[in-house]
Length: 230
Image 1: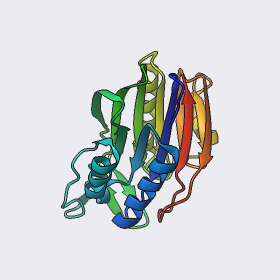
Image 2: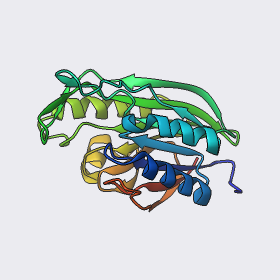
Image 3: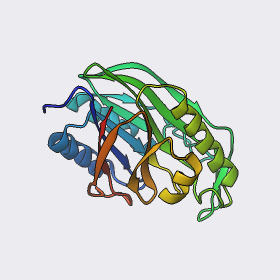
């Protein structure tokens, strides 16, 4: 697919922990065939690491994901290692990748389960000669004023610092578990905001973006297709 040198096509999707590997593989394969994204940013990916590796191998992507803990639900605290993942098409260069680790524990009230601090997958890429910084995020639940407010605020502050750290076009995208209007209020006017609901991209040094909503693919979240311009 022909792309402009300063364009990045990115698909963000919360896979849903209870989704099936069959659904996940079929969805990613279909989106890859139809849209040819440069990057996928995924959340709730810990239960689907094997199928993500399979997709990457057979569809020409590099998987950036921490190995999930196979005993993640045993014990008093749920281990969400591997929650966030990034898939980068093999035609592009991964210059660096790392994980930004938070410190605040948080609780899923519905199940009364305490979760370990969240961990966000980050990458510095070169796509058609243009550098991009990409961050896959999945913030704790219930927003800035809920019972996990300290953990949410920690993730928000870490995101804002990361976006401000470089003049390279930067994108933090995923399931941020907060309304877009509240995110705009927190970050301020120096940032760009794209998406709707709680599935949002926050950007810096991005000149423009258009987005569209994709199917759910067996998840409880729609995918988002973004076309960013540096």
